[in-house]
Length: 113
Length: 116
Image (cartoon, rainbow over all chains, first blue to last red; front, top):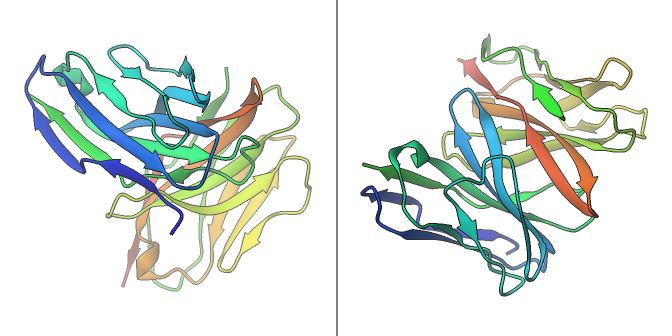
């Protein structure tokens, strides 16, 4: 089954404790992206990657890191999480042409206390 | 900057009624794509329908159709014969190419409730 697998689904952590949210896709998509969803703001892009070893900032990159060492994986790293990073996070992937839309992971609900 | 605006934070209709969700966007691009995504309580993001800007014909997927007005930069979603399973958050999204890859920009979302 073609899918984007994102883990964990729920995560509660404390301020300052480094964490990683994993994302993997099995569709050989070139393009991958991370979004955060907050009430009243919709989904905002954090980082994106057009291919292996090619990443760039989205609209809200502060406090986040990503890496793309393999085509299928695109982890999101929070080096020192803060409460304002409490949010719902989505990983998504698409073909380079993009016109068919994104396939999304099932989301990670992160709470930073 | 590209922006997408959904002016209806919440809507509620009776089962079997028709409902229209509005979406406007702002861009100077000529070639782009528009999408409607559905997010049910399971929070999975599901692609409902897509429209290519260079096509004048409005896209249709079963009970879902769009009214695409390119000059007015409007992209509304019509749901006919609404069903309880249509209850969800709906996001309008605009996409264009940046450096050969797609960038999606989302609206704020409309929470739609279908009442029995």
